[in-house]
Image (cartoon, rainbow, N blue to C red; front, side):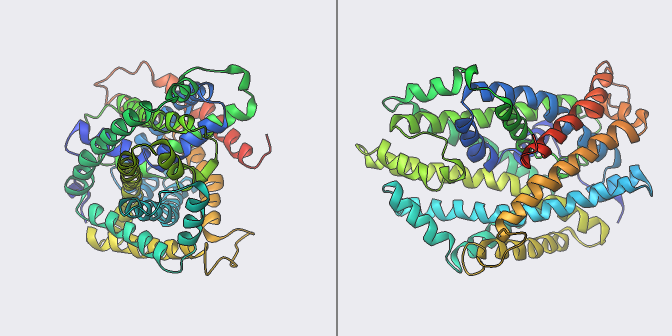
Length: 453
């Protein structure tokens, strides 16, 4: 297959929306609010933004440099630049990591679809006890979560199989604006509730007395995980960038859009939670147990509004999940398409089948396979821990070292300056960050996850 036949993104907007969509996901709508709630609110957000600039933007740039310079799937990209050196393993690591993530992430995405349907038919309106029992019953069901998870992967497959322009880019131009509109509608409804001002104050008025080294490290970790670093999706998407794409500007725009969505998600959740006296620090159970009861109680006087808000919220979650699963699927699809020399559709089916098998095992780990443990964890928790605690930090760390120390400076210069057509004044700053700052930050994230610092 000739690489000259690869089709890239057709516009700057398509590049930003598709790549931002890969970063915007459940981590923004789900993880960011509860992490903010658990770590003191506005002060956490300020340091999160600082770390996005220190780690996120240079980390994205590093993957962009690899992807666009090689113009191929992630594994071949690192092979081209690394030759026969051990650095070539980074690309394969990214492909494997992305497929594991797609497998278990689709389980949670499937839960979002179930809750969307349940909200639509009025099955998740009630107190926290009822909603908690509902979640436990559904997640341990032997077949419902499996169908939703596999169905979500197939939905993702239908987008990716259509190609970069007709599938990924077109879907991103529809999904991202829709996601933002839903966010704004939900924010308006949340901020109109009595007592919502306390939630807005919590989000935007810093209380630096709550800061400690743990909060700073949590903000650093959230900045890392929010931007899809280490998955190879940024490298894969960059392989479709045009020669005119300004990598640094694109990285900043994507980081800003990703951060905006995260903060807007907080503005949607905190006012509603504070209006009914619920602390938004309930951890991972926030969206499936805490929030349904919050919506029910907050809009008790006007049940139809609570019903609409609940439906829109889970529609928002499903859209956010889909923008991320599309990018995860594309990494493997591009790999199998180009390395096996098969059609794009067949390459996509390989990913769909493999990830569906992972999803089935992860889904059943909450029910009939609950006794099957890997290192003392069920399959869902094991896949989450393996990728978040080991594979993602490792992949991103190696990429930063690879770009900062191994790739010839001329290659990096050509990519950052678009072959000399842009100013190169920030090249030295970029190299300093990927050589020193980013590796130190990633090492800190790794050690903190294992409670070593």
